Amino acid sequence: MRAWVVRAGRGGERESAALAEGRVLAGWTEVPDLSETQSREDVKAALESAYPDENPYLLGNWTGQLYRFRHEIEVGDLVVLPLRSGVVAVGHVDGDYEYQADRGDGFPHIRPVTWRIKDAERERFRPDLLDSMGSLLTVFELSRFGAAERIAGIADGVADPGRPDADAFAATLTEPAKLFEEAQRRSADNPLILSVRDLLAVWNAQRRYPTDVELISNDLALRGLVTVPPFTEGSLDSAVAVIPAASEPGEESASELTRSGLAIVESESQAIAYRVSNLEAANRKPESVRVGESLRSAMTLMVLRGYSQLPVLDDDDRLRGMVSWESIGRARMSAVDVSLAAATARAREADRSDDLLDWIPEIQKTGYVLVRDHDHKVCGLITAADLTVQFGTRVQPFVLLEEIERRLRRAVDASIPLNRIRAVVPPRRASKVQSAANLTLGVYGHLLKAQENWTSLGWTIDQQLFLTALEECRTFRNTLMHFSPDPITDDQLRPVQGLLDLMRSLDPNN
Image (cartoon, rainbow, N blue to C red):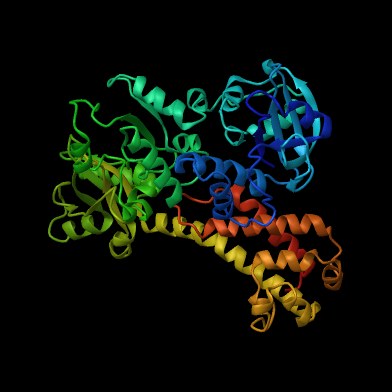
């Protein structure tokens, strides 16, 4: 379940109809029926045709809003309608997108809604939720800090618990314009600092997909802003400062920031590469011993922590080598009583900005690689185990999706004749379909909407709930195909795992 704000016009001109008819209504009266659109590009083309004289930036803004209204808002989602009287209406979406050309009020784009409450006082919402509703956009998602669950509770009469563990100030930056204003208002010694996660959320993004990176980078660059370090580095919880390009201490120029690796403006290859810094372990300073300490101290710490090796650092946190059980054994082959210096072996270190794939052979060979930051200080340690966890996590969604598709394929091939399978694909492609193996997840949804086909499966489960879960799975798969360095969360993976568990229960012997 997600939560969306759909405004009723700048002057509240759609409020009465929305509340009386149980609907939310979008403007853009010149835009025709969007029922047949399949992609963001389709919606954009409709807007460009309807408003040929508008600038590209505005058309891009409108495209995002109408695409959400038509394609992303789903049945069962919550919708929030702030009213001019100061109260808030909350409901849940009851039906798919509709287009009613004959409406006399000129608002043909519609989503049916059942209003659960029409007069929630603003005091019932904690400040972070109220600020999130403050965007000037007509259609946008309330995605942060458990907004959907909290709004559902408010509609049921439960007090809003808020999120005491959240960055309350970051939650007020509900749109890029607010972030730009705050960053430019700050002085050089008090910059705007927030997590990468909170920075992305300002643009309603959750992961660093190339399209989102490009959008955010361009928006910041247009306003003369940079992040230090680049928001494409580090984990989602890494902190970045958003500052004017020449306001870093010492008044460095944007070009100097670029040369030092701190500027936000990146090439396409940088934006899509999987960086060393994208691993959490690369941003977690390892335990270490200092030059001049005893070997006994190093060995004791290694036993206590179960480490195979420890970095040896100088007083500036720069790498001087690595002590390991292997290096200790080699040193003691020539003398029993050896110093830490004698047992310290050379070690290689990767820069946080390096391509992770370039370092995999080294990690496979030695079992680890140290990570340094832009000041050449050790900031992380990546082991072979870290790679196993990271790439295991990235492979898991593909494994789950593959099993779902294999189970669908087998069930459909066993129960539905080929001529009915071919009937759901365009005629020009029908002859190329030899079995269900030629269908995509989206086409499976169309196939199983037909009652005849659904009945043929013989499944004793709810058809609509299954189709909804299948569509969630299809959307997740499409998202997965767009590279992001950020991990898939359990919440994002849960619908896929749930659908697979359901399908396994339908055929428990295989």
